Length: 256
Figure 1 (cartoon, rainbow, N blue to C red):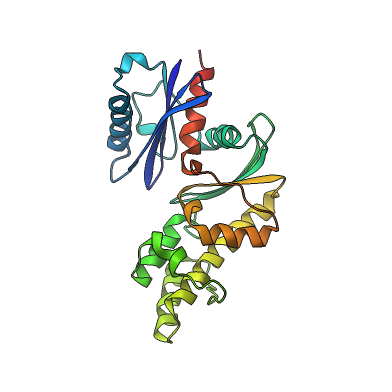
Figure 2 (tube, rainbow, N blue to C red):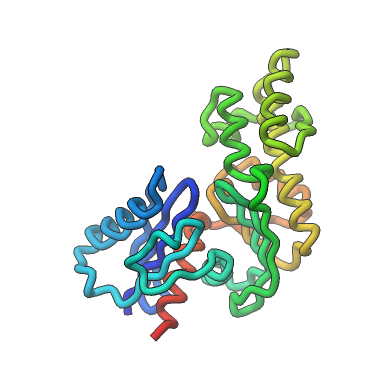
């Protein structure tokens, strides 16, 4: 049984094809761009082409993510919270808590031993502690977000006090005007992001083994900073950014 999970995020659209919900056959990622519908259709088409398959060979297509409603060809749409639980459990079965930092929101999810959601909290009203926050701040530093980890000072950071992205950007510009180094500011931005997510996690409880997902989880120094704050290494996988799509594909395999 072949299923495809498509996760349309604000920044990237991910697709994963699985066999019987147990084996990943193909994974693919593409920028979401201005149209979630077009990016969803594109990633679906590219997964099929990559495997030389017609649409009829796929048993189920499940959509998730903030743009899931645009997937009018999907057999079913499922919330990203449910899919993240299934996806993290697949990649690391001992996961009890998930920290996910996406482009426009951050969330902490508690799951049981079967990957079912027990509780969750989401910050989707403010860009603080999200990929968007780091993107805006990177632009202020005139670097790409992918360069933040390499740029950041390993020991010394300038504290970013503002919780608001707009005010934090002004704060960054002021720090540069005062002569602060970009490395110190970059470190401060990563510290600020970690602190905001830890506050969210503290409200729900960071229990057991914690899986770190989302595009921002690819920033090595941010992972290291969060490890220090938790006193417990975060679990991270090369497929962490795909957990929503993986979970959707798993859900599809269970829908008859």
